[in-house]
Length: 491
Image 1 (cartoon, one colour):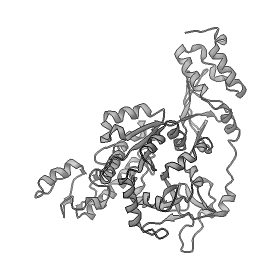
Image 2 (tube, rainbow, N blue to C red):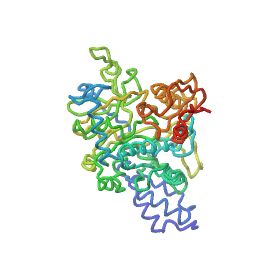
Image 3 (tube, rainbow, N blue to C red):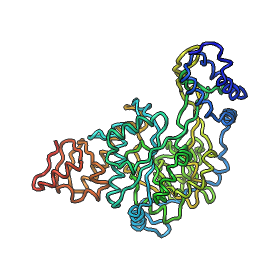
Image 4 (cartoon, one colour):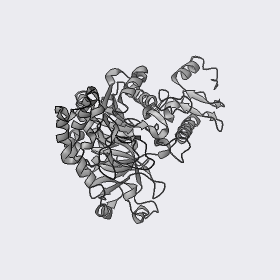
């Protein structure tokens, strides 16, 4: 390890020339204590920085997006309402079209899974969180088994593109390989990694260090998918395979009806380039993005940007005028993603003030007690205004939306809330199939057994009374089917 003469080091001089015009040379204060390998690591991270962009973003950090002009023209979005026709297209026709496209191998799933379980108190990728209320199965397993179930219905494999982040990539890859991808073929899994952005000190704009040899980097948001899926070659591989449509969803919602045929069908039959699932807001101030129509384009207005008088505005029938809350599930044309590829770097960055642990050469490792840093993220929904004929497709929140966000004991979106919603849904399927489930008894149904209530019909005994917690797995159904005269036990 060199401890002196470092100013004459060509690598140090190169980095100093890069950083000095932007006032970021403090990143080199740890240089004397670093090994050669550590110096190479830090140099690589510094070279990848877009310093002019970071400077512009910091200088504009206090600018508030003026949405007043948009809000004056905002109206409810073009939408497929629950159980209704859309421009003469009935749900059955949309469902049949989606099933056809799945059989023809023209649709892939894309799972955004770059987040860690930090807010859950779970020191691993969030997709590994054991959310199954009876089985303890992880989010990853539940999602992949839904894709496998759709593949079996379609009679052909359906590929999954899975986006990780540098913080979750290796652990995710190892986890999936150790579990043999939960039955998904290696040929049908495309894992790619999103980019990162450094955290800046909120008061000074200085880039923070996470360690003496490492910048404080965070994933660049789910909007980073566009650049990452193209840069990695994943989108081209899917296109070469005949994929024309992407079903995009996020890892934290175990109730997503992945590759839902009706949603895919409406997307294609309406001529939309990007469609988004929405739920009807329960109150004017629900903390969800508001999907609205402005002139001929759809866009999302954050709940924090929506003035109370517009949030509370009512339609003639008494319902909320701006009723559509986004849940982060989209169907997107592959051709559209290639067409807007140049927007990968033009999608706006959204700024958030966060608590970020950092390393200070004078103080050592610092764990702040209040927000101290600025993070930058891109959001995939910012593509919606660029899409032709974009539509909203309403789904039932009780059956489709249970986001896992917060640690146990939180007021909402905690594991206990998500599990309760899963149990309630699966209880309703069992009851529709003729079973009697005693109050308070947890039940869970594997996606490999059923994806909806209709799948469960004729697969369980009529008037079956369930008195103990039960997980309906393929093995359970097989055991009962082999001796149907015996009512299955629930222990």
